[in-house]
Image (cartoon, rainbow, N blue to C red):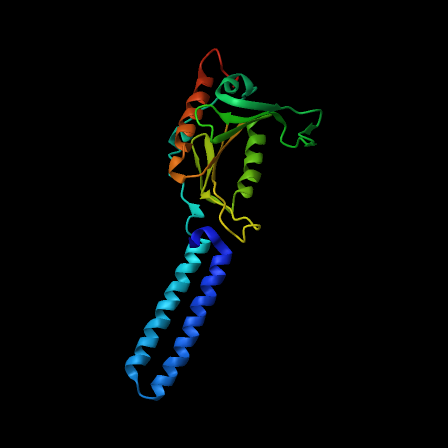
Length: 243
Protein backbone atom coordinates (compact mmCIF):
# COMPACT_ATOMS: atom_id res chain seq x y z
CA UNK A 1 0.00 0.00 0.00
CA UNK A 2 1.07 3.55 -0.71
CA UNK A 3 0.63 4.55 2.93
CA UNK A 4 3.00 1.84 4.14
CA UNK A 5 5.95 2.71 1.93
CA UNK A 6 6.10 6.44 2.44
CA UNK A 7 8.81 8.35 0.63
CA UNK A 8 9.96 5.57 -1.69
CA UNK A 9 6.46 4.90 -2.96
CA UNK A 10 5.83 8.61 -3.47
CA UNK A 11 8.97 8.83 -5.61
CA UNK A 12 7.76 5.90 -7.73
CA UNK A 13 4.30 7.45 -8.06
CA UNK A 14 5.84 10.78 -9.02
CA UNK A 15 8.01 9.25 -11.77
CA UNK A 16 5.15 7.19 -13.24
CA UNK A 17 2.61 10.03 -13.16
CA UNK A 18 5.09 12.58 -14.52
CA UNK A 19 6.05 10.23 -17.37
CA UNK A 20 2.40 9.70 -18.33
CA UNK A 21 1.74 13.45 -18.19
CA UNK A 22 4.72 14.37 -20.38
CA UNK A 23 3.93 11.67 -22.93
CA UNK A 24 0.28 12.74 -23.05
CA UNK A 25 1.14 16.45 -23.41
CA UNK A 26 3.53 15.78 -26.27
CA UNK A 27 1.02 13.52 -28.04
CA UNK A 28 -1.77 16.08 -27.48
CA UNK A 29 0.22 18.84 -29.14
CA UNK A 30 0.94 16.61 -32.12
CA UNK A 31 -2.67 15.59 -32.67
CA UNK A 32 -3.81 19.19 -32.12
CA UNK A 33 -1.71 20.35 -35.05
CA UNK A 34 -3.27 17.55 -37.09
CA UNK A 35 -6.69 18.92 -36.06
CA UNK A 36 -7.57 15.72 -34.21
CA UNK A 37 -9.43 17.60 -31.48
CA UNK A 38 -11.02 14.54 -29.86
CA UNK A 39 -7.64 13.01 -29.11
CA UNK A 40 -6.32 16.35 -27.90
CA UNK A 41 -9.27 16.69 -25.52
CA UNK A 42 -8.64 13.18 -24.26
CA UNK A 43 -5.04 14.19 -23.60
CA UNK A 44 -6.19 17.14 -21.50
CA UNK A 45 -8.41 14.82 -19.45
CA UNK A 46 -5.49 12.47 -18.87
CA UNK A 47 -3.26 15.35 -17.70
CA UNK A 48 -5.91 16.62 -15.28
CA UNK A 49 -6.38 13.08 -13.96
CA UNK A 50 -2.64 12.74 -13.45
CA UNK A 51 -2.54 15.99 -11.48
CA UNK A 52 -5.31 14.64 -9.26
CA UNK A 53 -3.41 11.39 -8.79
CA UNK A 54 -0.28 13.35 -7.89
CA UNK A 55 -2.17 15.24 -5.20
CA UNK A 56 -3.61 12.00 -3.86
CA UNK A 57 -0.17 10.34 -3.81
CA UNK A 58 1.16 13.23 -1.76
CA UNK A 59 -1.74 12.88 0.69
CA UNK A 60 -1.51 9.09 0.93
CA UNK A 61 2.26 8.99 1.40
CA UNK A 62 2.78 11.96 3.70
CA UNK A 63 -0.46 12.77 5.47
CA UNK A 64 -2.99 9.94 5.66
CA UNK A 65 -2.76 7.87 8.80
CA UNK A 66 0.19 9.84 10.18
CA UNK A 67 -1.73 12.35 12.31
CA UNK A 68 -5.17 11.75 13.78
CA UNK A 69 -7.21 13.72 16.26
CA UNK A 70 -7.57 12.49 19.82
CA UNK A 71 -11.21 12.36 20.83
CA UNK A 72 -10.95 12.89 24.58
CA UNK A 73 -13.03 14.76 27.13
CA UNK A 74 -10.85 16.73 29.54
CA UNK A 75 -13.75 17.73 31.80
CA UNK A 76 -12.70 15.37 34.64
CA UNK A 77 -9.28 17.09 34.72
CA UNK A 78 -10.68 20.59 34.22
CA UNK A 79 -13.00 20.22 37.22
CA UNK A 80 -10.30 18.99 39.61
CA UNK A 81 -9.57 21.12 42.65
CA UNK A 82 -6.50 19.86 44.48
CA UNK A 83 -4.89 20.92 47.77
CA UNK A 84 -2.48 23.85 47.47
CA UNK A 85 0.69 21.94 48.27
CA UNK A 86 0.92 18.22 47.51
CA UNK A 87 3.79 16.65 49.39
CA UNK A 88 4.58 13.43 47.53
CA UNK A 89 3.30 11.10 44.81
CA UNK A 90 4.35 7.58 45.68
CA UNK A 91 1.74 6.22 48.10
CA UNK A 92 -1.37 6.73 46.02
CA UNK A 93 0.10 5.64 42.66
CA UNK A 94 2.37 2.69 43.39
CA UNK A 95 -0.42 0.06 43.64
CA UNK A 96 -1.92 1.33 40.37
CA UNK A 97 1.20 0.80 38.26
CA UNK A 98 2.57 -2.42 36.77
CA UNK A 99 6.08 -1.33 37.58
CA UNK A 100 7.40 2.06 38.54
CA UNK A 101 10.50 4.00 39.38
CA UNK A 102 10.89 6.97 41.68
CA UNK A 103 13.40 9.74 41.09
CA UNK A 104 14.22 12.18 43.88
CA UNK A 105 16.56 15.17 43.98
CA UNK A 106 20.16 14.78 45.12
CA UNK A 107 21.25 18.05 46.60
CA UNK A 108 20.74 20.73 43.95
CA UNK A 109 20.48 18.15 41.16
CA UNK A 110 17.53 16.22 39.79
CA UNK A 111 18.25 13.33 37.45
CA UNK A 112 21.76 14.70 36.94
CA UNK A 113 20.66 18.24 36.04
CA UNK A 114 20.19 21.42 38.03
CA UNK A 115 16.87 21.27 39.84
CA UNK A 116 15.65 24.68 38.63
CA UNK A 117 11.97 23.84 39.23
CA UNK A 118 12.47 22.50 42.78
CA UNK A 119 11.13 19.05 41.89
CA UNK A 120 10.40 16.95 44.98
CA UNK A 121 9.94 13.62 43.22
CA UNK A 122 8.86 11.95 40.01
CA UNK A 123 7.05 8.64 39.64
CA UNK A 124 7.03 6.87 36.27
CA UNK A 125 5.30 3.61 35.33
CA UNK A 126 2.57 1.90 33.27
CA UNK A 127 -1.03 1.84 34.40
CA UNK A 128 -2.40 -1.55 35.44
CA UNK A 129 -5.83 -0.64 34.07
CA UNK A 130 -4.32 0.37 30.68
CA UNK A 131 -0.82 -1.11 30.10
CA UNK A 132 -0.48 0.80 26.80
CA UNK A 133 -0.34 4.04 28.79
CA UNK A 134 2.68 5.32 30.67
CA UNK A 135 2.16 7.87 33.42
CA UNK A 136 4.64 10.30 34.93
CA UNK A 137 3.67 12.23 38.06
CA UNK A 138 6.00 15.11 38.96
CA UNK A 139 5.67 16.94 42.26
CA UNK A 140 7.17 20.45 42.36
CA UNK A 141 8.18 22.62 45.29
CA UNK A 142 5.17 24.88 44.80
CA UNK A 143 2.49 25.81 42.28
CA UNK A 144 4.49 28.64 40.72
CA UNK A 145 7.35 26.27 39.91
CA UNK A 146 4.88 23.82 38.38
CA UNK A 147 3.44 26.59 36.19
CA UNK A 148 6.91 27.64 35.03
CA UNK A 149 7.74 24.03 34.13
CA UNK A 150 4.42 23.65 32.30
CA UNK A 151 5.26 26.61 30.04
CA UNK A 152 8.52 24.97 28.99
CA UNK A 153 6.79 21.62 28.51
CA UNK A 154 4.12 23.26 26.34
CA UNK A 155 6.82 24.52 23.96
CA UNK A 156 8.16 20.97 23.59
CA UNK A 157 4.77 19.80 22.28
CA UNK A 158 4.18 22.60 19.76
CA UNK A 159 4.70 20.43 16.67
CA UNK A 160 2.16 17.77 17.70
CA UNK A 161 -0.19 19.80 19.90
CA UNK A 162 -3.85 19.41 18.95
CA UNK A 163 -4.99 21.98 21.49
CA UNK A 164 -4.25 23.39 24.92
CA UNK A 165 -6.56 25.07 27.39
CA UNK A 166 -6.99 26.45 30.88
CA UNK A 167 -10.00 25.70 33.00
CA UNK A 168 -10.57 26.44 36.67
CA UNK A 169 -7.43 25.26 38.45
CA UNK A 170 -6.03 23.12 35.62
CA UNK A 171 -4.22 23.73 32.36
CA UNK A 172 -3.63 20.96 29.89
CA UNK A 173 -2.27 19.89 26.51
CA UNK A 174 -3.79 17.29 24.19
CA UNK A 175 -1.63 16.07 21.30
CA UNK A 176 -2.55 14.44 18.02
CA UNK A 177 -2.22 10.69 17.64
CA UNK A 178 0.90 10.44 15.50
CA UNK A 179 3.00 7.82 13.78
CA UNK A 180 6.59 8.70 12.96
CA UNK A 181 8.56 7.65 9.89
CA UNK A 182 11.76 5.64 10.07
CA UNK A 183 14.71 6.71 7.93
CA UNK A 184 15.90 3.10 7.56
CA UNK A 185 12.56 2.10 6.02
CA UNK A 186 12.81 4.86 3.37
CA UNK A 187 10.26 6.90 5.23
CA UNK A 188 7.77 4.11 5.90
CA UNK A 189 5.31 4.82 8.70
CA UNK A 190 6.16 2.95 11.87
CA UNK A 191 3.41 0.77 13.29
CA UNK A 192 2.65 2.46 16.61
CA UNK A 193 0.44 5.44 17.23
CA UNK A 194 1.64 7.73 20.00
CA UNK A 195 -0.40 10.35 21.82
CA UNK A 196 -0.07 12.36 25.01
CA UNK A 197 -2.08 14.35 27.50
CA UNK A 198 -0.24 16.66 29.90
CA UNK A 199 -1.85 18.66 32.66
CA UNK A 200 -0.87 20.86 35.57
CA UNK A 201 -2.89 21.39 38.71
CA UNK A 202 -1.64 22.76 42.03
CA UNK A 203 2.06 21.85 42.32
CA UNK A 204 1.96 18.71 40.15
CA UNK A 205 2.26 17.93 36.45
CA UNK A 206 1.10 14.59 35.05
CA UNK A 207 1.99 13.11 31.67
CA UNK A 208 -0.12 10.36 30.09
CA UNK A 209 1.50 8.81 27.00
CA UNK A 210 -0.13 6.04 24.98
CA UNK A 211 1.45 3.77 22.36
CA UNK A 212 -0.87 1.48 20.39
CA UNK A 213 -0.91 -0.34 17.05
CA UNK A 214 -4.54 0.47 16.23
CA UNK A 215 -5.95 3.94 16.87
CA UNK A 216 -9.36 2.45 17.68
CA UNK A 217 -7.85 0.62 20.68
CA UNK A 218 -7.11 3.82 22.58
CA UNK A 219 -7.66 3.80 26.34
CA UNK A 220 -6.72 7.43 26.88
CA UNK A 221 -10.19 8.53 27.98
CA UNK A 222 -10.36 5.74 30.54
CA UNK A 223 -6.92 6.74 31.82
CA UNK A 224 -7.95 10.41 32.11
CA UNK A 225 -11.04 9.45 34.09
CA UNK A 226 -9.05 7.09 36.30
CA UNK A 227 -6.31 9.60 37.10
CA UNK A 228 -8.85 12.34 37.81
CA UNK A 229 -10.73 10.03 40.17
CA UNK A 230 -7.49 9.03 41.90
CA UNK A 231 -6.37 12.62 42.33
CA UNK A 232 -9.81 13.52 43.63
CA UNK A 233 -9.16 11.43 46.75
CA UNK A 234 -6.59 14.02 47.82
CA UNK A 235 -9.44 16.08 49.18
CA UNK A 236 -10.34 13.34 51.64
CA UNK A 237 -9.36 14.35 55.21
CA UNK A 238 -6.94 11.45 55.78
CA UNK A 239 -5.06 12.04 52.50
CA UNK A 240 -5.05 15.81 52.22
CA UNK A 241 -1.87 16.99 50.56
CA UNK A 242 -0.39 13.49 50.21
CA UNK A 243 -0.63 11.94 46.77
